[in-house]
Image (cartoon, rainbow, N blue to C red; front, side, top):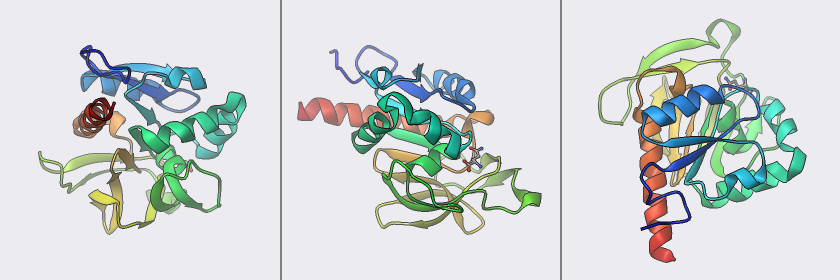
Length: 207
Ligand code: GLN
């Protein structure tokens, strides 16, 4: 069975937005989790993907770079219908509302996110935190991390740092305020591949 959504021929094909930031580490993590990973720099690169990772970096810079070639609109169109996993700056881009300062976003994840929300002393940290994912506590690496300040009713919290959600899921959207690609644990990337596989099966059924 061959499907146009990257499913069927073995490893799902997942795009990694490769404008700026640590996209190479995500591509490696996706391969380790069993996917094929390809860079996305232009709208046409989104064609046929089973999902997309928007990596960390600087969200305001990512927005500036995405303003070229109609990429922002293409990313928004993709994120409205397809599986997307945003980490750190990628989480900021997915959120419906961004604070400190307010900025534009793809406006798909029902959440309010504050940029650079942890004080200077603790803005970068490695913490082991509880998670509902099977397999026990999760190592989480934070680099000038945002804070998810509020979430809507359709958003499920998969892990928390203190009282703050740091890994959330809204259907086919997954967002982390930390950098799972910088830890050896591949549970979060595997979860995203499961989300992408389920979405591909549903798309096939609807076709
Ligand atoms: N501080 C960055 C921002 O506001 C995010 C940091 C990261 O992605 N590691 O966009």
